[in-house]
Length: 374
Image (cartoon, rainbow, N blue to C red):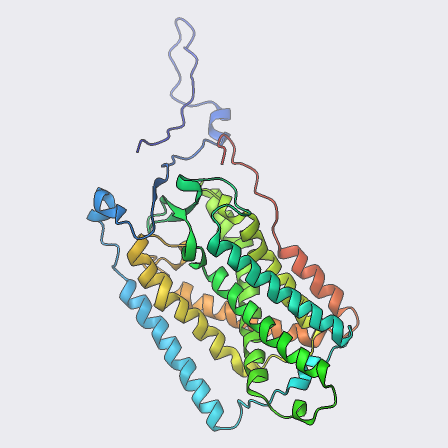
């Protein structure tokens, strides 16, 4: 494919006067559009497009990946060790009861049940639409009606793929979305049990489903915050500065997953009374490592030769530092999710949390770069 070159028309110098080698001040300060390369494709997922690309075939794209994977697996082993030690020491205790899911400081139990059922129905309804439809709620069509998704190679050039079927669940956003749906499904079931028999003695005894739901809430809350902030403040601005397409972030599906996930989590943390155990943090880190080592950096990259998240590039000179900061950031968001549950009972806590959540959501596209449409 040909390169897009920015050019400027120059006036001829007056007769008898040599053209100055110093460009005018307006030229020095003007913002010239950067060189851009059109996206390759579109291709089907799994199609070995790189075999016909001399740049990809000549580059060593796997250099540094083993080091990054070993680092992530080392973090996973540390998390497993922490879980084993805290369980043996009696610090990590699974003692959540179903009665916890029938408690609320702001709403009645029937309203809490309806909220959780509505959230679960919305999440899995959206998943069903993504899975079976190439048309519903989608903008822009590629071949056979499929929407195009643009991803980046390790050198940050774009490749277009036909978006369809289970490949619509390839992102961490979708994994976190399904995880959140599982929480609301289990929480709604437990709430219904409590509402059906409020005085039953078994609701006061530790329950396996209740403990799992508490774990799911902590993990999905941390990832809802991480995903929304990463999309709003990292992925969209970075792609916009590079002149790459941000259309995929503003489809109705993407807007729902990047914003409604945080809204539903905040609603649950403010209205419900399910605690988030700080000792569940290793499970949250482990979930992210499973996504990276078991899918994004390995299976998915081998089938597409692209990354969904450019900052996970293992050939970046600070790759391990970025991974470390990502884990620390996730831990901070996990702690913040636990803090929200404590803030809801303090004066002004709930409005403050709602304002913060609204401030980090993004609904509008960034303005086009000077001299370049998107």
